Image (tube, rainbow, N blue to C red):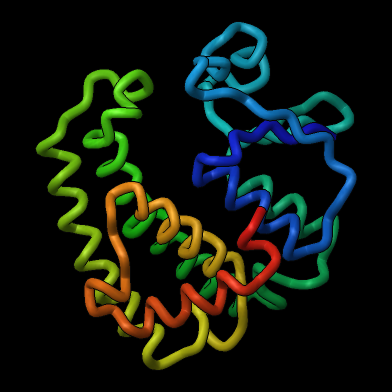
Length: 205
């Protein structure tokens, strides 16, 4: 199988961290240069029509092009170590946590960076700086909620490390581009959690 990635982008990094956590090796990694607009070239669009990374090309030629779908597929092929839930109840609560992080934490961060960072101007046309700045403010509200969650439980979805922690860590690391630092903002539990995740080998994926 081939996995098309752009390692500096948050969504591919989520998949790469997931693979390391599950000790999955042997995929053919293909780097897509977003700055060079490779994701918008005909060869890549034939594989990922919406011009998104990551994308997983299966051995039979079919494509999976959404982060969560790729991780779900890999979890099915390699059930251990489990990162998405052992039964229906746990799977539902882990997915709830992961979706919350993806939509309400990662998305504002991405929108802020896409619309305010000069280096992303070629990729985000047109940029709307006011929108980006407003998204940065919304980030603080979600960070406050997440900090509260981590004051009462060790991991984002509960008592153990899951895919929700991967999504949250990648989001928080991506937020460095907007000069967001959880500790400096007073989110002590969030910073402590971030530092624990940073000690895991997957954090360097």
